[in-house]
Image (tube, rainbow, N blue to C red; front, side, top):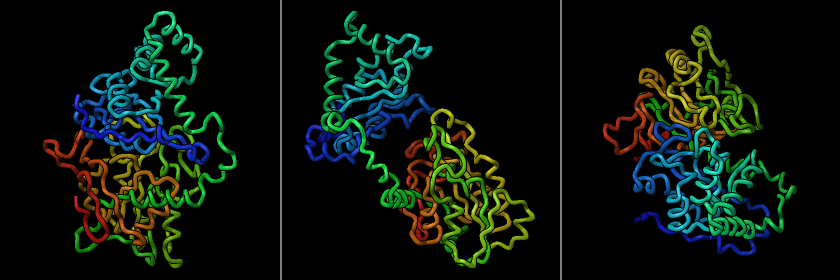
Length: 431
């Protein structure tokens, strides 16, 4: 097999004692190997259907860099590649990752990942264990029935020989190598003195920079000669509306505090409403109404409006849906406001959402913030011109639900916004 990816310089074996004694370091895990983001129709734990060349060119591309920078653990994906579960793929876990890419760390399974190798899940546990371990799985994440796992693993090695002892030796060697290099035996527990470092000023500044640079300006003005952004800080009266305008939980998305995330002020931070209030002049009146009625909009004499809409937090399969319209009747709210007041729309989501042509036509500006987390202030930085927009689309923004899968270079490529698209307040970014 020809592998087009470059062979990484593996830092895991080159790391000296200086790393071991620096307890502020963390052991990174690259995941999910490989193709989990390219499943058919985006289904969680689904099937990535593509050639070996496309798998390498698109999905495997980040891994050599991760390995060369010292990432020492890699987690297998729940998904499949052309019908083969990654947790049971000897070709991808051993032949490609360990042999071709010279990965010296260890491969870890996902939560109950090996259970997915039979139906009903976990019913033939010995089969699941043998398939995963022989494929190249070094460490198995067993949240519940670990005693059963150990019993069956020993049986498969000692009694039947279905798992060779050499495979166990290889897994143990890899795990011990990582633990020795990162000083786990000398310091098995994290240093509690470092707790105050989490969320410190430097961390917040980095998070703010990440938010600012990830924003994508999709529309700025109803014509190129009259840009709508940046917003005026000295406007007399402005309207802020939408379910996501004052909700840090929605800004954060899933995997925040809890598995699926939550609504409300779940963690310290700044909502977009608060960020706007802090950015405008003292004399500017900011009116917040999550879902304003026509009478409020018409009588408000607003200089402009900011409508913030998006998805509720989700994680994994709960995020799978075929209807990708804006939740909470977001399109109706946008239309109602934008029909009467010059309007900026902010979309908070983990993916593109459907924006109907008639809605897009009415709005004066459109910004995709993705999930800015706690740092709403950095969104305001770009809205008011303290920083320009630099982000571009990392995916194609489709027109309607039935259009995906849609990829640049594909037949009949006709997106709402193409891959790599993004505007500055002054001019479009070349794509």
